[in-house]
Figure 1 (cartoon, rainbow, N blue to C red):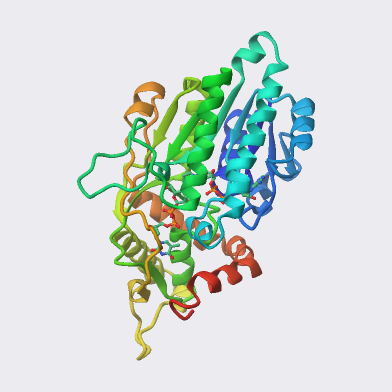
Figure 2: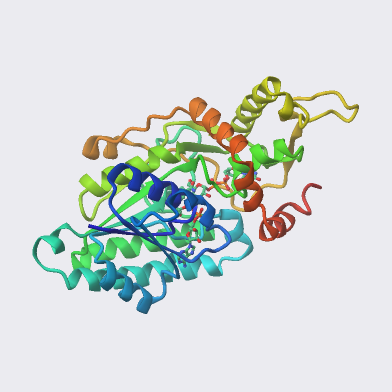
Length: 370
Ligand code: NAD
Ligand code: DAU
């Protein structure tokens, strides 16, 4: 038995691969193009482990996909590979269409052909799990009920539009060909190995480096935060017990405005600074040289164009049908995440490479001086 994972060198994919192999021992073929977001260091602990076969390649490369299916005979595909950063999709949508739409289409075609070649139980048991996002539902008003699986799609960014397109293809493959696909639409993830361009690692690492914390607009946009470990568990449970053709929302049940979230992170970091003399040397200082809290680094900058105001995701269906509930609270999850970044300085320093600095300059250069 083997599963094929795409995008398994990225943030969520690598957490999934590590947890999957530790929990089940089932081999994984990990297909990843290693874009700027893919980081082989995330998988360093699997070096020499025969249960992990890493293949550098594109999900749109059909001959490669055909070879991988024939050689490894996977019983399931778990599809994470994507361009995932909303801000990058605003600067340049093309790779989002190439990978999220065309790449997913090619992967679906190759997976369908592979399944068609199977017989009996192997064919019946085959599953394709498509990992998607709550952003496909658009933006909620303050008092609106949370997104459910029947909420109409209303994507607002090139990123979410490309994910919505991929969700529609997956849906059509089930409806037309009886292809056994399941889609999960989850809320904002956080935790170990997240690329430092995303809000939570960006804030932690900027505090450690004494750099400003850029808050888009008024900072009162709301996100629902899901610890990546909980998300990986949800995917495992859906793979096991989810019904083909269905979609399942996965939320963290932890709504927060961005400003509150950043203040919570700053408070956790203040406590870490207070306890650790080595860290204390990096403590943010006021212009007069006095120690100032990490929150003193907050700067409001121009808003993200088309910025969605609020996401909130109901877990009713996934809880009812597959028994999933998140375990991590935002408080415990943030504490754990800050500690992880403090303990993995080599990892985040290597992730902040030339491409990262180029991006930071492009995205923030004109807004705030770093
Ligand atoms: P990420 O950007 O950290 O990682 C994406 C991975 O996909 C990288 O390793 C990259 O190299 C790989 N990749 C990109 N294009 C590829 C291609 N053409 N072929 C093969 N590999 C390719 O993303 P993430 O945050 O881990 O997100 C994983 C999935 O979960 C995505 O589909 C994303 O839309 C979805 N999602 C993410 C979040 C979140 O908060 N991060 C929330 C909801 C849904
Ligand atoms: O909801 C799920 C989505 O969550 C996923 O589909 C995406 O792949 C993932 O990147 C994430 O999207 P967001 O745009 O919500 O995540 P990001 O970390 O970029 O931003 C979180 C919020 O913080 C958002 O409201 C924008 C704001 N923000 C972000 C950055 C990077 C800032 O205020 N300042 C910043 O510098």
